[in-house]
Image (cartoon, rainbow, N blue to C red):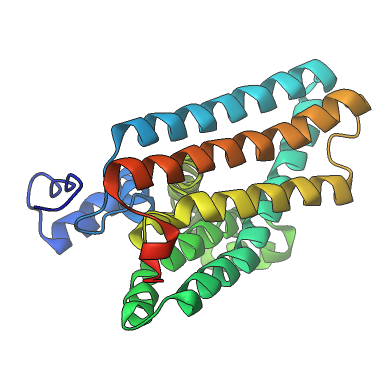
Length: 262
């Protein structure tokens, strides 16, 4: 018997073709397939899952509260400006992840001994696919809105414009839900090993805090509140990640050392 509960197989027993068709019809189902860890035998700890959800929800509430309190959103132009600022920050986060993900995973894989390196490299393909899916879905909006591609939209005519609009709407639903799932599951890196998500989450959140300091994020917020907000997220995530690693060790016998066979 394994020392931890196994995740039950997905219900329904659908074939790969039926899953693809369902994903085409439903971007939220496609996001679930792309961003939820699904490795056989993965640890499914309800307490860790609830804590990850609370962490994500509290971060969203804090961001909305900060925006409403210190951003003078009184017109449509103000809403557009705030939305543009948050979109740019989202892209910064994605770019930071693109750089950080292979570094952290590469160090983890290189530190593993024996045949584990090959196993972890193979497992890393799905998390890497999740990162690429987010980038592609966020970039799809350029087809519908970028002025530089206006000639392409004119060339494809009305049927092409309708197809681009449908693709854009599908991508927006996929990206928004996918970003939420990615925050909770840290881009499904538990598919590599259960200890990778808390490690990667700590590196990313401190990296984003440093990026906020360098770029002067939230300039309209008073210095004290800005410092609390910028430092509060990495401090909280670090504490939660430590708790997650401790729970994995105490309840499931999983540690960084035994993950690397050291």
